Image (cartoon, rainbow, N blue to C red; front, side, top):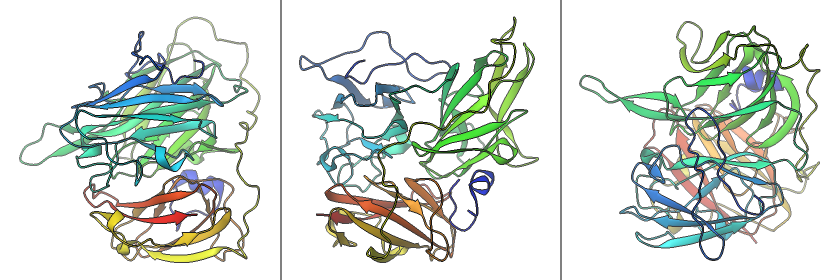
Length: 421
């Protein structure tokens, strides 16, 4: 979705319970429980087990209201150390699960308590192998799930569906093959009624795959990217492209007749496979006519401007990042809290890479550094031989990872770190 070389406009981007986190019952295979386990202190427990969190993949959908505190105890039942990284969440450093905190040893636990500052669609996962907070295979065990922080003023929609996309091994002759599935299922049906407005929350949890997702016979309006609201715009050909780690919120108006079925497709023209289906219920429409155009989602507390003139400016060749023990290397750079950082991500490799900055969201700068794209990102795709320039306000103190994964090379994750003081 966010190739620095390909982005020209917003349209082109998408072309190329109270205070506790709760279970939420949703269709199509996302983990849902009627009874939750809580500690005497009121923390929801989450067990890291073989096969995923709570032994299922994806893990439980965690949902809370904006302004509420997420209170969760991770219990490690794996043979390796682990942690949780809250992908896309601007979070206090000790809760990030990157360089901090220390890894949760087998049989141990750690309490995560924080108030997400932003409403939106996020996800959580075990850190990548090689991180000081993980000594295991992380994503290969499907240790991930979705975190939804609801807006204080809910948008005017009729229904929502959450789709987490991931690689799953399939039977093959002589070589391993993987198939992208939605919520761990092959082509689940998503119920809808005529003239309803759907909110689709899409998460690319695949380890190293860029996903091109198209909704057949519907108009998809992009409402948020990586959890941050965007000025609503139509996705060209109703297609969005998600780099590893990206999320997107779409509004889709259901305009087909009762009983109709429309596929949600993966791939490019002529080579598409069905990920899921919009399955229209029988009976009369939900309302006589479609809804009017959607209003933008409520903004999150992010700066309206970034001071590029007085910014800390750093060029970072991605091949300088380490595949093992990045915490043992010197800091890539340091910045005073509140200072703008302009970071040039220089990809000198032969494959595109998806770069993710922990604890911060950033603007993608224009080619001449004279402005930025009208959306925020947590992960950006940097094409081979290209440089992506990003800018963010270093406003959360601590030591933060920058990770990069080469596309179609899931074992190629590298990282370094920077400090905000």
